Amino acid sequence: MLYYKTQEEIELIRESSLLVAKTLAEVAKVIRPGITTLELDRVAESYIRDQGAVPAFLNYNGFPNTLCISVNSQVVHGIPGKTELKDGDICSVDCGVLKNGFYGDSAFTFGVGDVKDETMNLLRVTRESLEQGITFAIAGNRMGDVSAAIQQHAEASGYSVVREMVGHGIGRHLHEKPEVPNYGKRGAGMTLKEGLVIAIEPMINMGVKSIVHERDGWTVRTADNKPSAHFEHTVAVKKGTADILSSFVFVEEALKSNTNVKK
Ligand code: MG
Ligand code: MG
Image (cartoon, rainbow, N blue to C red; front, side, top):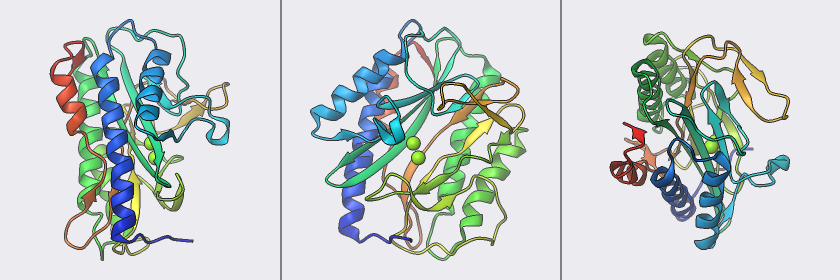
């Protein structure tokens, strides 16, 4: 079942997605070497609740926290805990909220302290891959156009694309149809129509594309233990140009005054 959204529904998803964007900015203000991922989770949960919204991931299929925080070779779905971030880590922070009956979903990967240039390049290319994919998320294109754009940009830098995890439709449910793969063939897949709202979220690995599951039942990690990055936007398909409902503007603004994050 595919749900196409009305403009009114899209505005509600935008409201939720902008709340996610501002929550990620709260994290961006305080992230630094020495902070625990659980402290970041607390910051996010109280901010979301203060805005009258509900953390979307908390208790989702039993997930124990507000944020998915995935460090270094962790790809996605990392559980916040008492481990402190270290100088040189990269840290993917994925956040979802539910407000007014609609979900928003976005993720940003931070460079904590003095991160190696080659690792910062992985972050840059992953974010660019997301942006490349978004440019194809317009009515009349195929899903494969979005997927191929992401894959081509990531692989052109020698990186690999995780296959097992994909983006998704979003709206009244956190995960709706269709799947949004980060690899594929131009011209293949479903035709994108106005009103489709999708979360596009490339997970790009420095080394091999294969992943393993950690024993906590959630965390996904690269099979070769090399770093992985993850950026995500919630996007509405329109004619002519995609409408990005989430935003990294608030994160960028917050990072200006955080000298513990590498830009
Ligand atoms: Mg997400
Ligand atoms: Mg998502």
